[in-house]
Image (cartoon, rainbow, N blue to C red; front, side, top):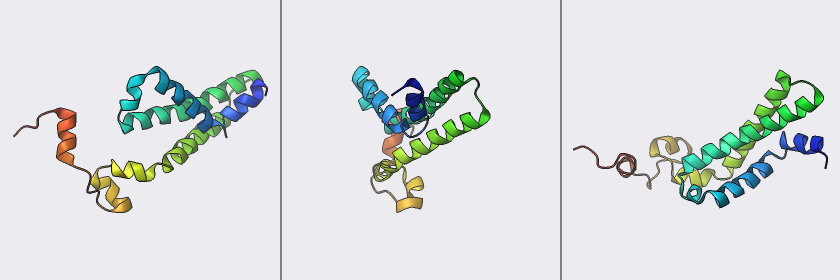
Length: 128
């Protein structure tokens, strides 16, 4: 596989494979990452899904001459699709940790969600 072929793969169909590869190293090198909240993990995944195709597109276009708006739009669209497809696989798991007011529109109220316990976890002791 040539560099151009790899960059073309990274800018499109290979985004999730490359993001998974990068995340496996993050989990190995940062032991605290496995204990991070699901929101932090989704944010890191989202940033990588946009950074990988954007960097690959810039590198690919710099080899070819110049970066066009269409190239960047294609890279951002691919990153958007890659992130949301990767999260769709975990939609049921995410629903179990989502507040009831947002999960109600998808699957009804979430009996496992306790807003008072979440507030205590975030802010410590609640004022009386």
